[in-house]
Image (cartoon, rainbow, N blue to C red; front, side, top):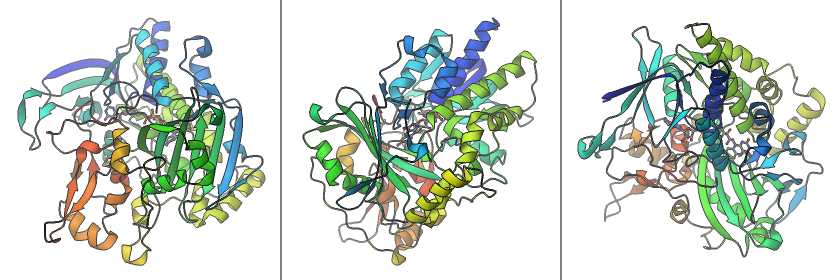
Length: 544
Ligand SMILES: Cc1cc2nc3c(=O)[nH]c(=O)nc-3n(C[C@H](O)[C@H](O)[C@H](O)COP(=O)(O)OP(=O)(O)OC[C@H]3O[C@@H](n4cnc5c(N)ncnc54)[C@H](O)[C@@H]3O)c2cc1C
Ligand code: SF4
């Protein structure tokens, strides 16, 4: 449906840390050699940062390489980490690990808002000549006749629910480029297609994921400790559900608080959002939040598969970078620094190919990446997350052995299993009764969604596509008690019945979707496909 075509040397899909750092590095190299490369970045959020959600404790290693003098360059607010705490929570108490495990120590790191940081990176990129198009989702991949990637097409605007043109209709724009870099973050929709088409996952473990639910609170000044970092494990999650929380005190009495739940959980009655609401009621956490107010809410999936789940990274005409490929170091709960570095390595690889006029597939990117510090840190951490499959205590014991005895060099690699295959039948699991929200510390999903500033044009084709519309009622409801009602952190999926309480059907409130991608990952029959809605739709995060 594209009418207009634009030509670029490089098109980058996604203005997160990976995409923006790739653009900046390319522009830096191009400017040094006076090459005047045409580089563009597409972003589905209505501005850069609008769809970025992270913790975030930031490791500045890649940034130091990209802008050695970044601290003097009007950098967005950052709070140096002053204190690290790691607690094991029980229902009422918290037990300290003194000192925290080495990978959870944050000396020399900073607490930031990643969405603010991306806005700053975008400014830097534009100053170097990069063109950034927020509000435009890349919807389809374009291919040359020889099968290599030719670029992308952005989504059209102005289609109604049935896919028919409204008076406001504007077709998508085709963007042709020598190289296409996919920087869509975790579970990117085009990245998924590319992995399938070019079989990039062949011989690799499936990618595995966690879901992070996060709020920003303004707390009473006497409770705020700028630079304090707290991580917890244990309660409210049971010992076979992987996950943990984070509480980061950043500037202006703000704290970033969240819970991550491994999406390999087994019980279909588990609701990650409700687990987070319970977590906030723990005496150690409630006392921090009391008297404060929640100002922002959001959720996002993150990669947990690590080294063994990284797909082949190149395909004819392009590369996968950042969390599109899965470089998050889950043992550290950090992926921004690896996303940035991967973007920079991709940029250098593409640049060399352009100056040598080499049009072959850029397989050397993968070699360089695996030899870089990304490869080193992901390889060392590769067995820690899968060890928790055997339960919390076994996982902790193995993590200690791996860190202190094997030092990440054990002569084995534990395997990963796809998250959607882990869900057990509802009949085999206990129902979980979650407490009602108190409206002060804990909330219901719809109240929270309002704090994500999510907005979609209502009259547009639904962007949560059911491959088979019968599956939710014929399979998911009887076998798993419709788990989509619970794992979606925005209340998008509801089973509704007629006045007699019969004839269940799945109602999809797509306008509430916060683009976390959990349904695309966790649906037990892989029947839900998340595709980009009209550009600019979705959450509107300012500080996430
Ligand atoms: C709850 C949580 C806590 C975390 N905590 C930390 C932490 O403390 N420290 C840390 O270092 N890391 C942390 N991470 C991980 C970190 O946020 C990611 O590793 C990092 O954001 C990955 O960067 P990226 O550029 O690859 O992807 P993203 O940051 O996800 O950016 C991708 C961008 O691409 C856009 N996009 C996607 N698809 C399209 C499309 N088709 N068309 C146009 N635009 C598109 C998205 O809107 C988004 O802006 C955390 C993650 C989560 C979820
Ligand atoms: S519909 Fe899917 S992507 Fe959207 S918020 Fe719910 S689980 Fe996340």
